[in-house]
Image (cartoon, rainbow, N blue to C red):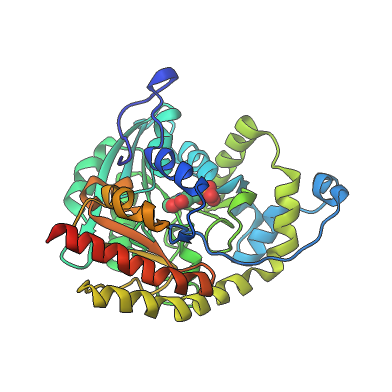
Length: 373
Ligand SMILES: Cc1ncc(COP(=O)(O)O)c(C=O)c1O
């Protein structure tokens, strides 16, 4: 179930994203207690006519300008894309030195799109890891040093899925330093990072160095997953490459997506504020359930999800105990085989629904513990 790394693929070599093959049918079951959503549930309210939805590109406005103003960067440091997933492929293409190896080093655990997509654009993908050591999620520096001479790009997700843990500043600075010395660029998937805005943990990679680009979108922290609106921030040279890649592979951005993004863009901070409220309301309830079951867990310091060990294969447990209870949460093994006993739980949903799900999660943990006894 973990991401499938390896060489370039085409035709029937193209691997599925096992996580999505598992998750989408279960999401469609519409289980009443859904703790699987790593995207924040925010109730946006806007009205747009069909003329506004379809006619954006005649309006003279520019979505890259909104992003540039929000981040206080120049327009030539922004490339718009259809969500972070698309932005990752564009960023990798843009950041791969033309005379360097077509090899991408990918941090594991990871969301499979981050780790597999480069194979479809003709790259080999090799791993390096960040893991519990013990209790702290630390970069494996030996592995990074080992792969650096072989790669053109390093891809990572500073706020890791499924743990929600931010990379430490020491590891982040070290990575920037060694990649720069090696002439390797960094593609940083930061879809979960904006939940840390206003804290010491908010450290986008593009602000650290010219050899790093940051990928982000309105999907997760802003609760607009279906919109497919994302962006890449970085040094003008790499961003220009990304814009060319976008033009070649996509042409122009979807007018309805951009129009809807424009309708909410000035209010984005409202969603970030609401994340803190959801956290304050929901997280203590989760911690109480875990404590009752003897699970001693330190949640990540910001954001709306995290992962803890349930001492059994989480795919199996979801099937055996979760389904009959109408419970859905995400098995950690979808992100790395080492996390197969981990369960990712999200607390960014409606507070009433979250409260109702807590006794169900508790029953789920009881069933596992009785089953293991
Ligand atoms: C690390 C990571 N990046 C990107 C995405 C998807 O981003 P988008 O919807 O903007 O394509 C996900 C979704 O689960 C994710 O976990």
